[in-house]
Amino acid sequence: MNDAVATTLVGILGITGSLLMLFSAIAMFRVRDALSRINVFSPATGLGMPLIVAAAYVYDLHSEGFSWGSLLMALIAVLCLIIVSSVASNTLSRASVLSGQPVYRKTAPNRLARPPAGIVDDDPDYPDHPRAS
Image 1 (cartoon, rainbow, N blue to C red):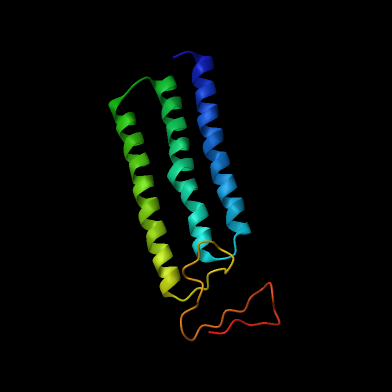
Image 2: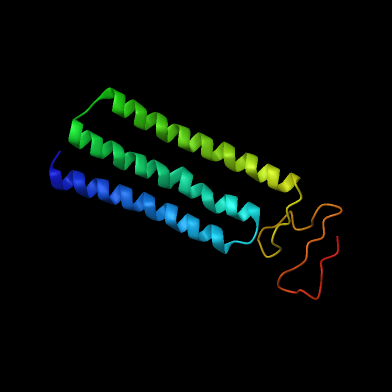
């Protein structure tokens, strides 16, 4: 593989993956509830990290040459990232809902807008009007 092609490919994959991670991290600070935070972090672990792994594999392929071990490790890493990301997102979302965390009411569609019994969810946009439980 040509040096310029390999360097360009590693740069594109690595920077794209890093930007996805950065944008997901910034988005986590902008959303208001736990479910939305879990939702915006999923693209980072499902797409950003595999792109970084692909960049590392292309770099290894260019510098060391082809090896079945490197290819197998890269494929297992990407597969594990995707599986762990989806299982973790599902588990964290269930835990968030079952623990009674309020869902921001302007989230659409919002089937979980009503808090569970006994949970008072004060609206930060309207501090004079607490939401009835």
